[in-house]
Length: 141
Ligand SMILES: Nc1ncnc2c1ncn2[C@@H]1O[C@H](COP(=O)(O)OP(=O)(O)OP(=O)(O)O)[C@@H](O)[C@H]1O
Ligand SMILES: [Mg+2]
Image (cartoon, rainbow, N blue to C red; front, side, top):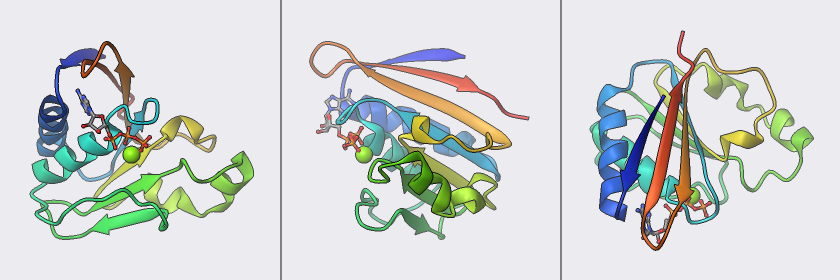
């Protein structure tokens, strides 16, 4: 468990980049925080830390964007647009919760299925202006 204070989008990107450097095969990183907290910024950093040079965009229409070309393959999921618990559980996302590479899931708090095996929870809280409090917990096996 730890806390990181971000003062800018660049700080949040750097926090993500270090996570990407540390990430191991099988990790699921769950990102929570209000709309516009900075979850996607953090994912862009994670991708950079994994050595992914492709541009990372939010999976708006697709439920998942996959980036196979880094040190480890990255799957980027966003549960925001799945409206009900049934829709989330029925979407067949389970395979991403024991990933070959790394899975990053925005709005992970909406997940009500079985906990991933190697789970890192990251919560981004909005403080004043651009300031963010990033708290992380490791439930890793
Ligand atoms: N410290 C900060 N860290 C991250 N983003 C910041 C910070 N300060 C300001 N911002 C701004 O907040 C916005 C964060 O957008 P981002 O898409 O990353 O949020 P999100 O949590 O993914 O939102 P959504 O729930 O809609 O997916 C950007 O416009 C960014 O410039
Ligand atoms: Mg987002």
